[in-house]
Image (tube, rainbow over all chains, first blue to last red; front, side, top):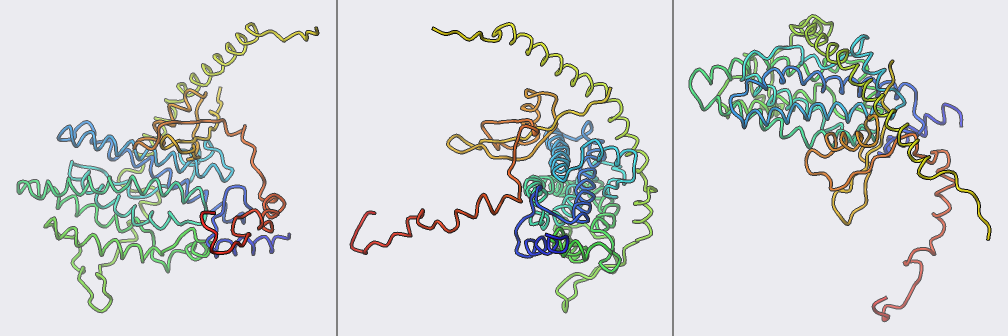
Length: 326
Length: 94
C-alpha cells in the first residue's frame, strides 16, 4: 500500500472507533503528537508532586497526612503509567526525561504556582484535580489504545483526589472565620490558573482541529472549560465562598454560566518559564534526577553481579550433560 | 557509567479463577525489582492477587501485516460454530 492508502485505512479505523495499537501503521505526525501530549502529561504528573509534597510534613492531622501521601504517591504512579504508554510509541524513557529536564518539553503551567498554606491543598484537590478530571475523562476514549487504557486507570484514582480536596475546603468553610478566609483566599488564587489549565481558546489552538480528527481529543478546550465552570460554581455556592469573577452569572439562554475574560498574557508568561515557581520546580526535579543517578547505577551493577553469580553457580551445579548410551 | 534499566511487561491476576491480564510496563534492574515496582505502581488498590513480569524483549508479537493471513481464514469457517447446525425445535437440551 502507498502512503495515501495507508493514511486512509488509518483514518477509516479511527472513524470507526477501532483503537490504534502500538504496532499498527500510523502517520508520523500522529505518533509525534501523541509522544508530545503523553509525555507532557507524564511530566505534569511528576512535577505535580512538588506543590503538594510541600505540605506532607505539615498536614494538620494524621488522617490528612495519610490521604495526602497516598495522593502524591498516586501522582507518581500516574506519571509512570503515562511514560509507559509513551514508550509504546518507540521513544525511550531516558529521552523523554532529558527533554523535560534539559530540553524544551512542557508540563501543565498550573504547577508553577506556589502552595502558600494548607487551604491550597484543599483548593488543588478540588479545582486542579477537578479540571484534570474534566480533561481526562474524554481521553479514556482516545484513539490510541495504550493512552486510553492508562487514562482509565488514572481517572478511577483521580476521583479520590478531588473528593479529599473538597472535604478539606468544606472543613475550613465550616470552621472559624479565619479558616473560612483561608479557603476564600485559596479559591481566589487558584480559580483563574485552573481555568487556564484547559488551554487557549479554540480559535487560538491551531493543533486542536487535527487532534479532534484523529480522535486524540474529543472535546474542545472551550467546551471543557465551560463544563468545569458550570459544575464548580455550584460547588463553591455550597461551600459559601465566592468565585473571584465579577462577570460570572447564569445565562438562561445559553444554559451555562458566563464568565469574565482570562488573562492570557499571564498564561503565556508562565508557559514561557516566568511563573512564580518555574525555576524552583525544574531545579528540584534536576536535583532529584542527578542525585539519584548513583542509586540507579548501583542497582543496575548489583543486578548484573547477581546474575553473573547465578549463571556461574548453575554451571557448576549442572555441568554440560554427557550423552550416555546403554 | 550510564545504563538504562530494562523494560518489563506486567500482568496481573485480579482474583483466583481468572487469567493474568496485561496492564502496562515499567523499568527495573531485575525480575525481583520488577515485581516490587509492579506492586507499587499497578496494585495500590487491591487490583490483584498475583503478578507476572517478563522482560519486554522476550515477547514475540505477531505483526499487524499478518492480520489477514493469520486471522481471516477463521471467518469463513462458520461450521465451527454451533449455530451452523440446524436442528428441529422439538429436540431439547442440545
